[in-house]
Length: 75
Image (cartoon, rainbow, N blue to C red):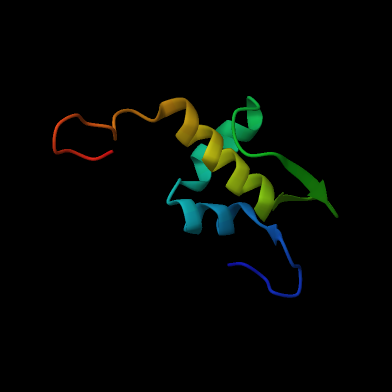
């Protein structure tokens, strides 16, 4: 879980809990460079919260569909 003594840094488990993406999938994304930016700190994988949020926003931008309807719908 997110450790408040390391502001902004998350473990793979933290990212998994917050995004509901399985740890194995996050590891797969890391191995082929498609997931959120990460790095090793003292031999352990860490993610910056800002990078995870940016990656989520990027995923939303590239996969968003709909949301704008004509006559009487959402605008």
